[in-house]
Image (cartoon, rainbow, N blue to C red; front, side):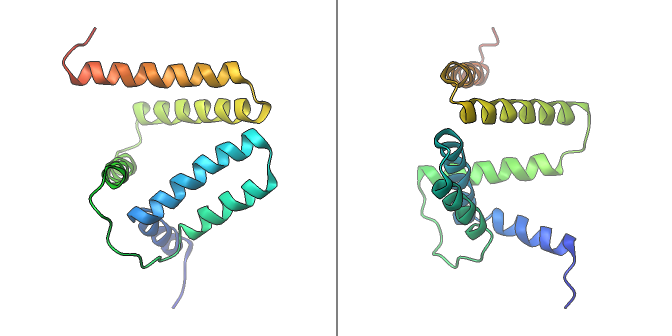
Length: 140
């Protein structure tokens, strides 16, 4: 059997979209943030191991109906929808904004700039409040 890069990518994406694997990848991203903040090589190794294990076939039981796995299923569906959307100006600008915010977050965690981290947390809360207002019908 010939293995091509596209078949490896398709396998990685299909494994990433399984609930337990997605949870491991989420934990690896959170641990990577703590790694940047603490400058710990041990945490870096742990986050890389979690990221790698998330691409294996885990063979775990089906997920139970819980709040976490509802969040995981919504997130996986959002990822599928985002990947299926055509590349246009809106998608490119949102991706550029996400990369900019991620770069700023990495910098703030690495230099331990608490003011910048609190600014990011405040921005996240304001975005959440704006979304809740929009969903409840208040567009102001």
